Image (cartoon, rainbow, N blue to C red):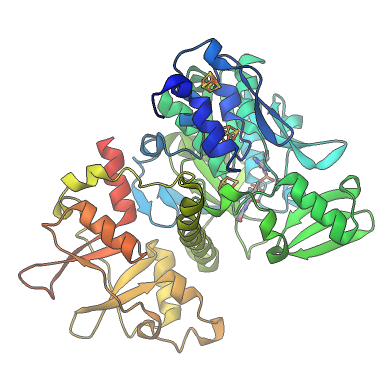
Length: 502
Ligand SMILES: Cc1cc2nc3c(=O)[nH]c(=O)nc-3n(C[C@H](O)[C@H](O)[C@H](O)COP(=O)(O)OP(=O)(O)OC[C@H]3O[C@@H](n4cnc5c(N)ncnc54)[C@H](O)[C@@H]3O)c2cc1C
Ligand code: SF4
Ligand code: SF4
Ligand code: SF4
C-alpha cells in the first residue's frame, strides 16, 4: 500500500487491484475479517457498505488477507513447512494415500471417495469440532453454492459433492465465529479459500483462534456463475431452474429431468474466473489435509496429509472405522495424473501471469516474489546433496514405476560414464502413449538442456536461471571439475529456505 491520503486504508488497493480487475474469487475473507463490517458480498461482487476511512486512519487487513494479494504468502506457507517431504508438484506433505468412505451410500452420492463428508461427519459426531464450514446448494437454485455453517451430521450430508462455482466459505467461517459463537471449526475449501484462512492465521486475526482443521480440495478452477449459466441457456436452451446437477468428468455434464447434456471442457474454459488462470496451486498446498479425485479409480479419493494436526485427525477417523485406505504406490497411474495436472496448472499459470502482469501491471498471488532474501544465501547451504539419478537406458515404463515409489517428479539422467546428460521428468514420460512405454527409453524423451550453477553462487542466481529457462530446478556442479555433479536446487528448496528465514 502507498501512504498517501486515505490509501493507508487497504480497501482502496483491494478495490483497484483485485475487485475491479476481476481477480476476486468471492471467498468472503475480507467480509469476515473487516473490523468495522464495511464489506459485504452481494451477488457476484464485494461491495463497500460504508466508507471505513470515517472510522479508521489505517487498516491493512482486507488487502493483506485476500488470497490474491502478494502479502503474507511465505508466512502462510510456514504452517505446513515442517512436513518431512517437499515436492515440486504437490508441495509439503507427510503422506499421500488413497482413501474412501466405508459407507458406500456416501460414495454413490459424492461420485468420489466421500472422504471429506465422512471426515466431517465423524468430527461432528465425536465432537472433535463443534461446526464445519461446507458448501450446500440453494434449494430453489441447485447450481448456486450456499456456504453454510454445519452444526449437525445432516448439514454435512446435504453438502456432499463438488460445486464448480465460487462459494463464500470464508464469510461463512466469520458467521460461525460471530453469529454462532463456535470455537472449534472445521473448514473445507478450494486452495484460494485455504490460503485466505492461512493469511488470517499469519495476520493473527482474532477469528482464526477458532479454526480447528482445514480440508483443502484439489482445484482446476471455478466458473463465473452468471456467465456460464447464460452461455448454457443461450447455446443449449437449458434454463438454470431446470438444472438438477452439474458434474465434471472428461466433459462438463449438465443433468436435467430430460437427461444429461455433455459440454466439452474447452468450450466453456473462457467462463473460468480470471484469477484461476494465474493460480499455481492445484492440491491445496496449505491445508492440513488435501483431498482430490483418484482417476481412474471411480470411488476413491486421493488424500495428502500435510500437518501433524491433519495426520492425527485423519488416522483417528481411520481407526474408528469410517475411512478405508490404500497405498498410492500400488496405483502409479493415479499419482502420475495428479503430478502432471499440478505441473500443467503451474506451468500454464506462470505463462498467463506474464501476460496478465503486462495488462494490469499487477499479478494475482504468485509464490516466490519475495526474492531479495535469496541474495544472501549461498547455494551450497541449501542444495540437496543426496541425488537420485536414472540411467539413460531405463524404459519409460520402468521410469514411471520408479517415480511412483520415489515420489520425486524429475531426475538427472546419466550416461554410461556416470555423467549427467539430461533431465527425465514425469511430465514427458506420461505423455508417451501407454503402448509405447515399454519400448521407449528415457534418453528419447529427456530434456537435454541442463541449467547449471555452482556452490559459491547465490540462491538468487539459481532462482534467476530457473525463471529465465522456465524450469523448476538447477544442477550444481563443482567449479574445479565441471563434470562432477554435487547437488540439485529446486524452486521448492528456495521456497523452503525463504519460509525458514521468515
Ligand atoms: C471447484 C472445484 C474444482 C475441483 N477440481 C478438481 C480437479 O481438477 N481434480 C481433482 O482431482 N479434484 C478436483 N476437485 C475436488 C473434487 O471434486 C472433490 O471435491 C474431492 O475429490 C473431494 O471428494 P470427496 O468425495 O471426498 O468429497 P465429498 O465428500 O463429496 O465432499 C465435498 C465437500 O466439498 C465442499 N465443496 C463443494 N464445492 C465447493 C466449493 N465450490 N467451494 C468450497 N467447498 C466446496 C462441500 O462442502 C463438501 O463438504 C475440485 C473441487 C471443486 C469444488
Ligand atoms: S476497515 Fe474493512 S474495508 Fe476498510 S480497509 Fe479495513 S478491512 Fe478493508
Ligand atoms: S478476500 Fe476474497 S472476497 Fe475479498 S476481494 Fe479477495 S477474493 Fe474477493
Ligand atoms: S483455481 Fe485457484 S484461484 Fe481458481 S478457484 Fe481454484 S484455488 Fe481459487
